[in-house]
Image (cartoon, rainbow, N blue to C red):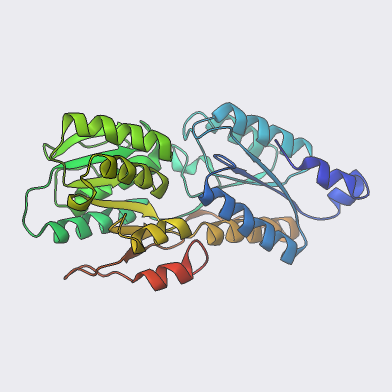
Length: 327
C-alpha cells in the first residue's frame, strides 16, 4: 500500500531521515486525477530533494485505508502528509493524532469537515467549478425548461456537494451555498444518483435515470469518468444527440471527450499544481518550521468545444495544453 520500502532500502533509516520525508495519500490509485497528482508530487519531490511516500484507499470512500496509510507514513518518518480525504469527517481523528505529533497535514482537492481540521488546503474552488458549468448549461438551453439528471459522488462529501450545488446556482435554480454539504434538489432535477466518480457506476446510474426520466435534456456529472458512463448510456438509448452533458475535472481524456462532442463543457482543475505546491510547502516546513495556513485556490477554467454568449470559456486546444498541469 505504501512505497515505504523504497525510502528505507537506500542506505537504511538514516538515509531516509537525512532528507524531508513527505507522504501523499490519495482517494484511489487508479483514478487518472490522482495518478496525475502523484506525478506532480513525485516531480517536485525529486526537484527539491525530498523523499515521497505514497498511499491510497482501495476505493473512493475508503477511510480506513487512508488512516492506515497515514499511520504507516508517520512510522516511516514523514513530517508532512498531503491528503485528499475520502471521508471528510471520519479522517479528522487520525489527522489530529498526526498534528499532535508535529506532522504538517495539508488537504489537497478536498477539504476536511471542519475545514480547519488540516493546517492548510490547496484546492480548486469546487463551488465555482459547478457555477461555471451551470452557467454554460443555462446559456445552451436558450430558455428551454431544464430537465436535469445529476450523477453525484456520494452523500455528505464536500466536493460533491459544492460542485452539485454550484451547478444548480449557475443555472439560476434553488440551491445551497458552498458551506452546505447537502445536495439541493429543485423541481427541475428529475433524477439524482450516486456514481462514486466511476464510469461503470455512472453508466448504470444513467440507465436507471432514463427509466424514470426519458425526457432528460441536461446531465451534470461529478467528474468525467461518470460523464463517459452517462454518454454510453445515452448512446445505447439513442438519446446522446439531444442531451447536454457538463462535468468537472478537465483531465486529458475528458478534454478529448469534449472535443469529440461527448461532453459539452467541463470545468478544468489542476491536480499537478496542488501536489507540487503541497510538496514545496512540506520541504519549507522541514527547513524552517514555517507552516502554510488557510485556503489556497489553485484555479479553474471552463473548457468548451462551442462557446456560448455571456459565458467565458476556453477552447479544446487550450484545455489540451493545460490538462491537469499548471496554469
